[in-house]
Length: 138
Image (cartoon, rainbow, N blue to C red; front, side):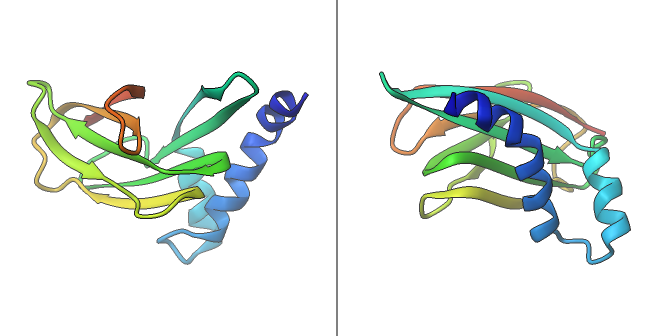
């Protein structure tokens, strides 16, 4: 039941969280950017009785020189993420320093070459990949 409730509330919580912290001060621009976002969702088990429900949001959808990234969970946890290029070379890493339910990052992509990149998400201190998704830099 808790999982279903969390799944149903995920979009609402993510919208409220994105409104709470954004690099753009104009509320109309914030709403426009969230509509232009790419959203991914995944669940990973912690133990037999509990799972993390994770929503990953990246905007704007068409990435050129910057990306805003929000990762939100139902319970505080700690993770790290890496970004690799098409050859598998790591070009960026993201490692928050304390557990939280909401993480925000602004990534400077200006030095990335146009092409396809993969974000790999890991639980802190572990090498087992929890989730991955690709994005294209224009």
